[in-house]
Amino acid sequence: MNKGKISGYGLIGYPLSHSWSAKFFFEKFEREKSPDNYYQLFPLKDISGFSSFLVNHPELSGLNVTIPYKETIIPYLDELDQKAKEIGAVNTIRITRANGKIHAKGYNTDEDGFILSADFSSVFQAFILGTGGASRAVAYALRKIGIPVKLVSRNSRNTDTIGYPDFQSIQFGKHTLIVNTTPLGMYPDIHSCPQIPYEGLTPEDFLYDLVYNPQQTLFLKKGMEMGVKTQNGLRMLQIQAEKSYEIWNRDIS
Image (cartoon, rainbow, N blue to C red; front, side, top):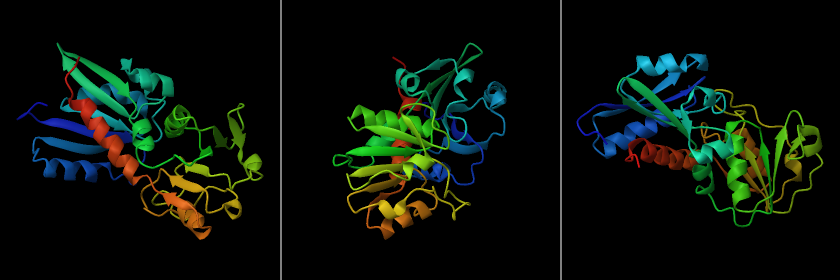
């Protein structure tokens, strides 16, 4: 860490009104007495201007990436960490500058954030709602610990993906995990939720929502009505943010 030198960090995505990342890092810097660090939200409407963005913000040492750029950011990076390559999505960028050149390397800490945020030992099968960058990280994490995964999408694309109409006939009650990786229910759209057969859920099942604002989404409320275990994405946010900060500040090997 560059003590005494301003280090800037931030979040890119669009929109960002839902994000608590700035609050998390503000409190972290206050707690750790790091007045030379700051974290800022950068709502970018067009990711094609990313290279110019880095030039125009010379104090930036690291970025987090959220919807809708976790996959589309990749062509604008100079290098990818192996895990980010395997997942096919990036949520963390380390920025280094030397001899007038900028080097941006992409990582994925969503996988660690998800798998360390809850106990999945009793899960028999998992369905992931959505097929974006966060979905890729969750699927990667669950498959790594041996849990069979199906993605649920508006369009069934391959053998690993089913459409929402097919999902209506799924038999639950087998310790099923359903993870919402879509923005449905996220502030300010708090009255929306994924259209799944909630009435088929049993107390053996587990609903996990990557959304954390609001802390109790309509998706989770409907699950609670059926007596299932529920969890929001706040713990995942905290873990992946800490992992990101480690990447931004570790020595280059």
